[in-house]
Length: 197
DNA sequence: GGAGCGATGTCCT
DNA sequence: GGACATCGCTCCG
Image 1 (cartoon, rainbow, N blue to C red):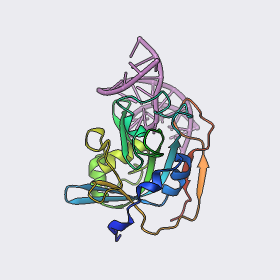
Image 2 (cartoon, rainbow, N blue to C red; image 1 turned 90 degrees about the vertical axis):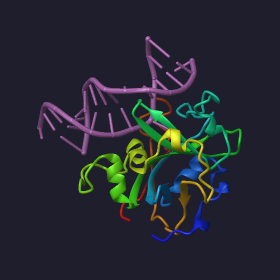
Image 3 (cartoon, rainbow, N blue to C red; image 1 turned 30 degrees about the horizontal axis):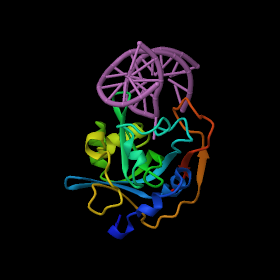
Image 4 (tube, rainbow, N blue to C red; image 1 turned 45 degrees about the horizontal axis):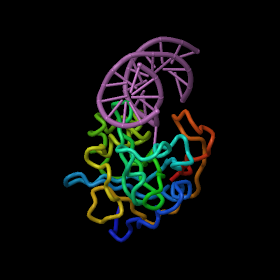
């Protein structure tokens, strides 16, 4: 995969409603620099969280220390810990002062697959164990933790976490209900890349 | 492949 | 104290 630094998605891309940003993120590349290695996956599943108007959003109850990034400028990584064991990655959307974001739920692994398997603690030959499917597994495979990457500006070329557009055009996508939430369960804010390349 | 369940720690309603 | 944008394990069939 050849990747050019001027293919980084600009801040303006994220300065929109999360439900508009989310489907546009499908097919883009999530790139994690890890020491000398580079881990790359194509974004295949995301969910939009709308902020103050969305009871399921971390921004719903107002700004706190944990969710402050959601209220900050767009294009910044919001990483939080869930169930004491796992991490979830989001990118902030909408202008500074307005909460909202997109949750990364799955990738199609492209580069650094051996390292991803190592980080997951599974064999690279283990086809049954979904390497980068699910928000927790995705973060585990990409080496994403709150301590390291929360509040990382993903629009900067110097950043160790970036999203690039390599020109890939998805065939289409599916919109469904979001997964694993108790409030606002029926909104179609989960977006999945069309199967087959 | 799916239902049930326990693990685990941080953050507030 | 209770909730939590999850996962991996069992057991089932």
